[in-house]
Image (cartoon, rainbow, N blue to C red; front, side, top):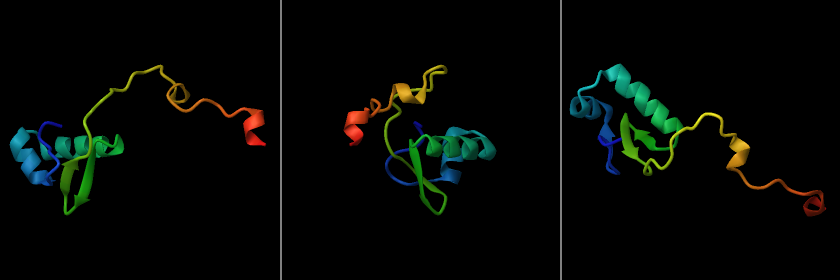
Length: 76
C-alpha cells in the first residue's frame, strides 16, 4: 500500500519501487482491488482509493457488520 498514492502508478513502477516480483505485485494489486483499497484506472495504472482501516478477522460473520434485520412490521 505504501507504494501507491492517489496519483496513478504503473504496475512496472510499483515493481521497481518495491523490489518485489512482478507476479507478486500483480497478485497483491488484484487482492487490494477486490478489497476496495486500490483501483485500476486503466492502462495498468493503479491508485490508492482509501486507507486500510480494518483487517480480515476470521470468525466474524458478515451479518455482524451489516444493518439490523428488517422486522415484519417494517415490511408492510
